[in-house]
Length: 247
Image (tube, rainbow, N blue to C red):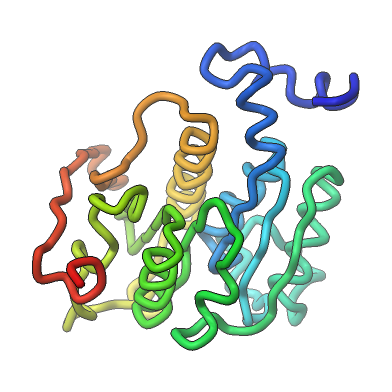
């Protein structure tokens, strides 16, 4: 918040009592890592960059495909075949040159997860496989970095905040093992607009957490049934038998 350009850009934040100048300063100093620049990561990244977050790291080894464009609004038709992380970074910098964006084209896995997340203030996970989700959760727990997790399938979505404190539940408390009936969007389908809703909620939770505004989803999970126009929030308990946070 050092010049008039910033004040003008973030004027709608600054007038909010819950954000104001101090909250905007906190955003400008924050570093968020996004796992996946796809259906969830794209809207989350766009809104965080627009909100004035200081640093974003995009981690995604994939390339843009034509069927991504139904929901992954960070990309355009001419981006097909290009790196999601690198192309997404360019789009975010064009949106807000004040946000420093780092593109990581390597796949996150258990061996490299901690090195990729180290130094972040917040992790947002919108990836599409449980192996990566488990690795992200274990690393964020070990490093003490709060984790915002989002997931979608067909017409349903969910968002939660894990690892916000040592006493908070982690992702493995909610999903201890890979579900035997785990499905992929490629097989069962996904409504494109739903990824926008859940991805935007992930960004909203990030902004609230960084600015210490209102109630977050710490220890709770928000479940959305978009087809039935219904939602509910469920409390999560720490699992004493959790393979990650009960050790």
